[in-house]
Image (cartoon, rainbow, N blue to C red; front, side, top):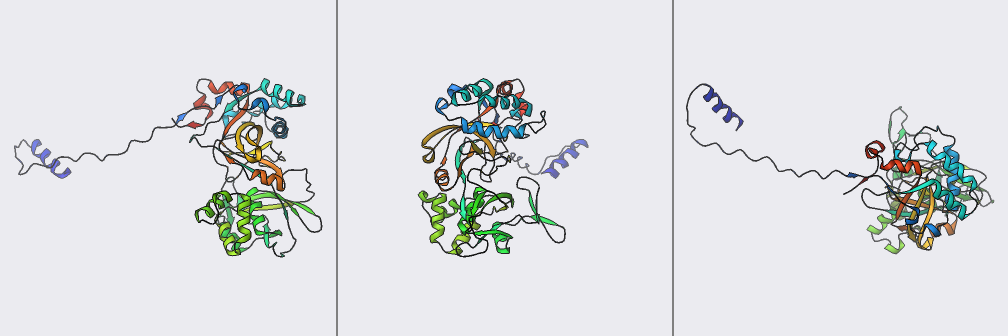
Amino acid sequence: MRKLSLFYALLVLAGCAATPDETPAPTPPPPVTEAPPPAPVWAPPVPAAFDTLPGWGEADLLPGLSAFQKSCEVFERREPSALLSDNAPWAGRVEDWLPGCAALDVVRDEASAQSVVQALFTPVEILSPTGDSRFTGYFEPVYQARYTPVFPYTEPVPALPADLVSEGGDNVYQTLPNGTRRPYPTRAEITAGGVNPLAYAHPGDVFFLQVQGSGKLVFPDGRVMKAVYAAHNGQPFNSTANWLLDRGLISRGEASMQGIRAWMDRASPEQVREAMNANPRFVFFNLEPGADSASGPKGALNVPLTPLGSMAVDRAYHPLGVPVFVETSAPGLGGNWSGLLNAQDTGGAIKGAVRGDIYFGTGLEAGERAGTMNAPGRLWVLLPSAVAARLNAPGAVASLGLLPKTP
């Protein structure tokens, strides 16, 4: 068609009149393309009044403020002018938080806690770009362990390998003998090749130790060691519960840590290995001596976690160390629950703006309570009032990189 049009143009330019032998076919219409979806509406987190927070008047604030005090110790060692988080610049700078940290010295009871928090902070609700929300629970397990493999304690607690290089997040590489590197292998590849063992425990216990990220190991001679998170292999976290559900190996009511462990106890070793390998994420540990029942594990902020005072969040959305108020529900929380927590940890499965993993403490009871949690909810960050006031300033959406909300 382009050659035919050029031919007629040349005839006209030469001053010649001609009639084509046949009428050219009409130009086909341009292909129909779907209109791009509308761009997300960029909206700031929503400042609120304390009396609008569900359950604020009855909430136990002291565990969350105790956790916040530990976070403040981290803030006080940082450069005051630094952003609290590059991913959440709307949370302000370190210096914005120091007055609130100093005021914690006068907190003595629930009444003084409420007075201090309401005087210095403003609740700001975080909205999910997708509308999704989910709150779960985790704990520090206590497992029986052995120095050498003795049935049923046959699974090695893996030490941090020398060939692992982490560049942050999921950018984890294996250094090869020739000096090159590649993405670190999956769980299946690691376990097939063997690891450097720190100790030995039941295969199911080691698996859940990796899911929880830390735990205590108790040996027959009475020695207690703390298995501390060292690194992961950079592979994605996949739900073993969903894998088992999809294959009809457990019921929906068994899709908990307790239900999965019960299935492992009645399944063959080969089935257990296949189920564990369905989650390619693999965690390595260090051992620390002198663990006791009172000391909690350290989270991503490198401070000991506080039972029902600390929560894991997604660092892509949230700064670590800030107080958050959560409304959710779980049998392990007594049903509907609201409480003050501190964002002190992260986790491979904790992804999203309104996504949290509440720390319940150490041991079997804490684990049973944490295992009941899996519910939607709401999340408010408690910002210093001056920082919250800047959210609605002209240009705040563009300058602060605030969270998107779908129309």
